[in-house]
Amino acid sequence: MEETTTPYEFKGEWDSFNANHPLFTEKLPTLKQVLRKVFVRTFGEVDPTNAVIFTLGSQCLDEFMEILLLCASGLGFGGLKLLRGLYERAVTTQYLATFPQDINRFLDYNDIHLGKFFNHADREYDVSTILSEENVEAIKAAYTEAKKRFQITDCRKCGTTRLASSWSELDVLSMAKKAQGSGNLGFYDLYGSCYILPTMQLHTTAFSFSGLVEENDLDFSFKSDAYRDAAQRALIGAHNIIILVLKIQSNFFKLDLDSEIDALGKDFLEIWQGRQA
Image (cartoon, rainbow, N blue to C red; front, side):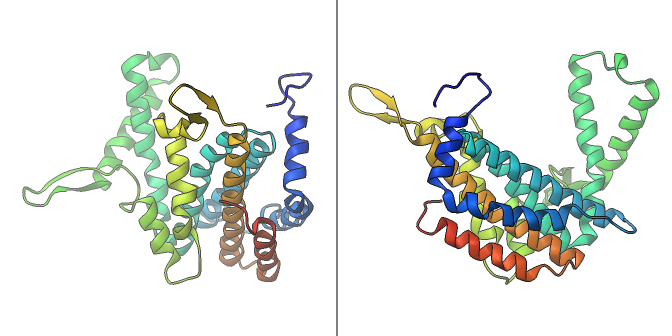
């Protein structure tokens, strides 16, 4: 990575990114225009369903921009790690937009998360210095009540149950497949490149550094182009996902942006034709 005058600048990487991806840079303003139409607007009456779908979509936009910043700065593996979160959030958005009857369950599971967080903290720290007794009792009561609603079968033979590990009994792949239905190419088809591969990079495994090094019988060295290769993989995935997120938002809120989003899809194919994802 090229050194600059301060540790916070990556101008050399930015210049290299623009040189390597001129068409993406050229067409990025068009993507931003559609993003503004979808996410910079005034709501009328807001209900929990609309709020959840819109907020999750906004978080997807944040993650897309974070990935873009890392990739353009030469930190491709950072972008690849963030891709997992973007994929999971986008899949969840699509699922809840397709099955809005599950949104209350999605929201209610927050009491489980807060209860687990409190229990972890309470084991190691004096939480009374942070939370009042009233807050503590409220968290405990909500957690106890929520656990009753999120029990799943542990053993059919003996009839035992256990606490569900998530608000949905579906794993990410099953959720992507169910929400996609019989539609065209979507999140289900991106599972390997946008979820499994980033997950392997996110966790501390030998796989997570295997793409960084070249080995022989005598020595090993770092691959000079590894970060930029990872940046391209991450950006292709993130670019694909954010267009799908725009489709979800436009369809759910009836924004009538189909033609503009279809044009973004054509731009995507033109930009990344022949590039490895």
